Picture 1: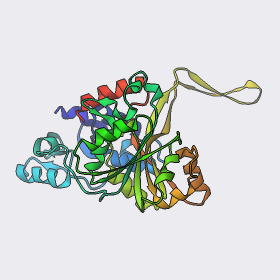
Picture 2: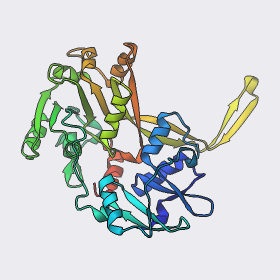
Picture 3: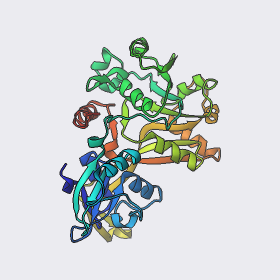
Picture 4: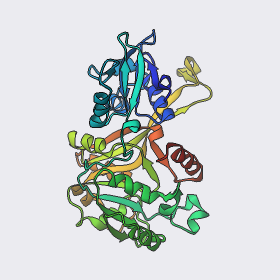
Length: 355
């Protein structure tokens, strides 16, 4: 591992940190001062907490550095450092000399025998997967198979989504089906994943949330909802912790998308007088990524047998005086196959990361 690639300067922006993490497929960077000396670590969690506090992505990395971090020293016992990596589930542990130079890294992947180690952090929280759509934007392949069975690598996307939740301790899955639903049901029931599947059918298209009305009496407490055409490379336990900590009735995961305008943007006052001009600005947006945490009682807000989208549900939750949380993830943590252009990019990224 070329550790220099995993370094960022203290004065670089949070946006630069996010972009580098996505580029490296890493959730941790080492922060250096102007002389190239190690001063701290910055993680995806640090950046997410900064975004939740409404800090600007243009703020410097140095503004969010933690006081307590884990590092090793060249004189430390190597086995003790490896044990620390395993016990704390660290992506890597920087090993420093007396002058705060980085000597080496001890990586999780080099000391763990299980790269996809499971946890039980979600403790069998139910998961609803919305797989009833016709996948019209992926035709002609969806003329033959449903969108949920479109492959990424060697597996269909719905299997990948389910296995990611299984790795966090989920064992109960509700699958909303309609178009070619028998193919989805037949495929999943033959997998032998050791979990329970409950299929419910939309007799007509019901939008991104309408079919949830069909399981009002079956789900109690907290549960996850996921579209069947996206993958989120995020610790779902952290999403749940955020949802519970802030007492939200609903939490949506949002990808931090950025768009650069290729022209100078002119701000104009009355009578066309130029106020300011900004050359090729970059704008940042939180984009609905298609994964949610919900409390079961808000299902009562969903009308029965009607077309109903999940954005309307979010608005109604807020109109009823309850809160909707937005949990940010980096742009690269959101993988989408909803349209051909995104599918092709996601397939390449998926194979590169070996997910």
